[in-house]
Length: 355
Ligand code: PS7
Ligand code: MN
Ligand code: MN
Ligand code: MN
Ligand code: MN
Ligand code: MN
Image (cartoon, rainbow, N blue to C red):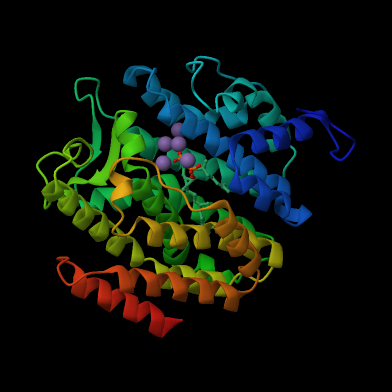
């Protein structure tokens, strides 16, 4: 229930934190613990992007309507009032679009430099998402090459990493070198989370009529991506597992950059905010690796595992230890018969050396 118990300095601010809790399980907890200097800015950044993603995800909107809405979305941040109630009643996060006025009110109270960072990322993400909305006549959207896969993930997650890094460096909570490397490390932070989400959500996304597994990878294992969930034969399952494992191999290439990034975040509250999603991602990758359940249902790490990970990830050595342990699990679970057995061995070895 929404209630302002005097903790927040305005009704709109209280309502924004209420919406944050409604729309995210894991991000709400870490954002609420941030230092006051960045807490409201990152909370608003999250809600603005959640609103944009709700438009992107809404399959009841025609692409003729959706594409300009995504491309122009950042202009709404210049308005005093804007809201949207055209999303279907089943759209789970539609609250942030219906009550976008509260987000705008708090957004305009942020430091101008924080507003500029948020608006620039919203502009580039909205335009990138629009590029990947396919025409109605193709009723399945999809990603063709590995390059397209990386570009889509750049738009929806790499850019979030860039924006968050700019905010943390501006507030002097992270090392300024992170904004002077062409954002390669923050890009890996975002891509590692997004790719893990895409691998895990195979079945759920197909059920929603979408898919983000790149054809360049899955076409080595099947002629049609949905066959992995439809064809129950052992041969099909074996190919499905080999495909998952190649996607995991691809995601593991971001790990070294992520660990370097985390070593350069100084403020403890920002460190937790950055590190917790990453340790959940490596735990999820270890869970999905060689796991046939991914082809039929949405798998999730256990509640108890999550709690232990959060407790252990408060320090950099704790995070490194968690990565070492899950990378070792993946290595042990790989079998000689997998076509990427050698490559998995190489990348796991490189990461373990690096730790
Ligand atoms: C601004 C905190 C920390 C340097 C809404 C955090 C959806 C994986 O759609 O909700 O349910 O499957 O499970 C977050 C880098 C982005 C990337 C991207 C904004 C880390 C809109 C998160 C989050 C950069 C597009 C959430 C990328 O997953 O998705 C803030 C550093 C939003 C981060 C989306 C996905 C995020 C995601 P869904 P989820
Ligand atoms: Mn989306
Ligand atoms: Mn989404
Ligand atoms: Mn524009
Ligand atoms: Mn997803
Ligand atoms: Mn999700």
